[in-house]
Image: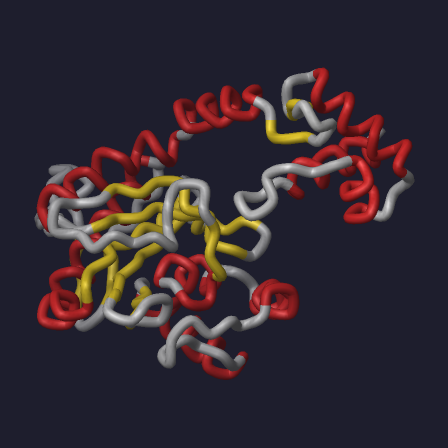
Length: 273
């Protein structure tokens, strides 16, 4: 039974924007299973609405997955906590803010809000993935993984170069992740797209575990003159989301100073704008 569930999950993971349709023979080859087994899996998933059969006998994702995804989005404590704060960031800065998690060693964007001053960022979007080593949110998420996990991710995904600024060696990555872990935030300095930078910070759950990362993406010519203020804004925003999720830290250090919040007064200086 467990093997069947695992194979069903593997079937669903085959479907991507690049290859949204699969046939029985292709699935059998991809999963290295008999065609009869692939046919049974596809037929069962279609009967449950997780897949749909096309007129030419191939399969696409079914609308039941859309229904389930909406349930996830509507019931996620992370999204409920993050959205209002992301909206404030966008209103204050006019730039793009992202919320991301780590899935299969890659950054998965689960929310994106774009301001009226923002560049169009085609590489990111809700439901899209990017390698983790080259983005601010990805560095934050990797920095809070055991180094052995990071090495396994690198062995699987590699260190793809997007621009001349992209990290491409394990030594560079390790030094960068150590810096991110110590300072409490990360930068993408034109490492995914020339002309685009971002500052990112971790979001923690009640236990203190880093479960997500949030970023502000800004054109390079606006980022560098405002780097300190942008960093303060995103670290403060991520901290506020963490507090909504039940995580509290009396003193919060980053950069050259500390900011603290009084538990009794519940007041903190707003740096969202």
